[in-house]
Length: 270
Figure (tube, rainbow, N blue to C red):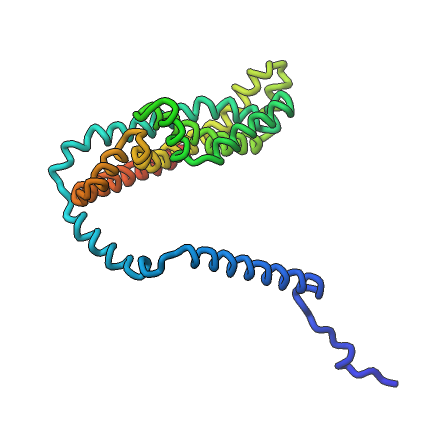
């Protein structure tokens, strides 16, 4: 009995039946989670305030602009403090993250236990936001620039350490084996084989982190850690929105300059 060609025709499908069912199951679970989260958020939201938000924003902009330009004379010191917090905090993070990265990298760590400890330091640093670090440090050592510098430094350790040790693990093995074959010590191998390969990446990452820290240091003053945040918090609490507008302009210009410097340095390195 002849077989019809239509019966032998195979229909191409991107996924098999089991994969299709799994994908649909994940979509259903994700939809349920999203709807559940939306229900929780909706129940805790005052929608009459949300509806009034555009009008409130327009009034806030009217109050804040034009900014009070003569207030700039009082912002030079907080501005300088903010730059110092970001710069010194980045330096603190760099000093600690540099050895931690070599201890965390698989190809340079002296022992697996030490690697676990180094990775734990990096994870703890990355898990806590700089504002939270500043809040705790202000409670421990009091308000001021020192709390802000340490908070930025503690936050920077995880960021720098993670990218540093990843760069170390991606180093080429040929120069390392060549220098090790000459009888060089472990320290000499790190200095003359690893460091020249990772130094450009280290420099670029450090400059990039400094650029980020400039932004983060502007808000640390909201919890008493010094810088422009203190002036901003004072202006908002006293409803002096024209002064707050001036601070916003200063922050914008400062971040713009730091971004330009960061981009120029990274371009010069690459």
